[in-house]
Length: 453
Ligand code: XMP
Image (cartoon, rainbow, N blue to C red; front, side):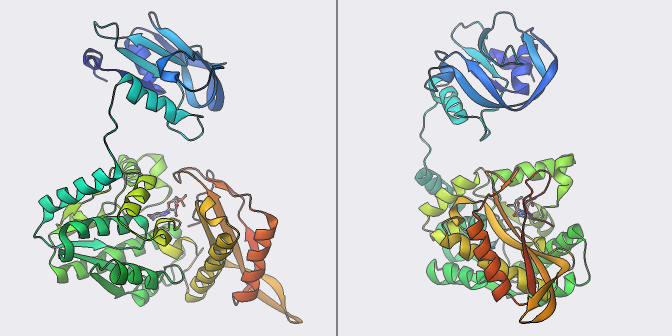
């Protein structure tokens, strides 16, 4: 980066490669390490350093590392932390002409969940070292956003695609607070929704929150378009295309100038990666972001694009969106098609929907629902033998997927108690016609993804 950054007279924090870059630019030696450090590592740090203040007094911390190169030496720097393989895992060095302003470098990642107390380190940097003020609250966010939307779109017509998920719901309610009836929400039932979802969305937004909602029953159109398609990526493309087509038809009728979208910060990271053509992005096409506005010539309103999911939840609470929507597990844009392996047929959809409802009900009953990231059922074309009465019968295999995750970039399968799994299995084979076997997915992400398709 531009070397003038060191002349701005502001504190700097370099993380991982950023720490190496600071060291390199200040004349230090960065070279290939004898051994890389990947994963959890113990950091030995100076407890009296302001960056580590209030962490603990014994000077040891579990941190998350992901690097091959190491900082070997950096003249003039004060070393405030080291690990077995990184002699300079944390340092500070004076910059500019001032002796009171420092650049800090830390080789580990304070921003990931696996680093103990990582938040506290970032907190120290922002509030102790930089002197930032904490004047940003959810109330002020909501108030400012509403004003901003009024200024930008007051008097114009706005459309918003409502999916029933937290992001689009929060967006819709924020915009409606700003411009009232000039907002029309479009809710498309693509036949790939969860059990009872369409009713719940209409109930909540039309009846309780008094939003103007156009309901489009497009179940047949989607199912027809999906007929005969087995490939996961092809299914996603068909669903994405048809969604845009139907949305455009409806938006035209309304004659809108603006489109409100529930893009959140992680979506932008994923689409930026997609744009750069990196490997990470090509795993699955997530079709929600970006595709609509360019073609439709509508101006965009994205009021929550700077927020992470947990912040969106807080805004939603502030706006009076019901808990049942706020706490609902994330659901993919392609809906149940992401959980039906192979061709999407009405029968497989029925099985997937009913079995997923049972999974959700049993997790709620046993107190697990709010402790996991996502929980659902998957169905494919494989058949397995069962007994119905005294007769042999062939039926589908339903796979249960329950994962814990922080931001869905990685995920572990949840070690549910056998009793809970047993209840789920018994109910599915008893209550869902055509299912003979239930299995549990015990793969984590990576290498598996959360959704099978
Ligand atoms: P994967 O299956 O890629 O999923 O590990 C990661 C998270 O993203 C959700 N997901 C989607 N969300 N549009 C979305 O908005 C999509 O096309 C889509 N595909 C997967 C998935 O449910 C999980 O939370």
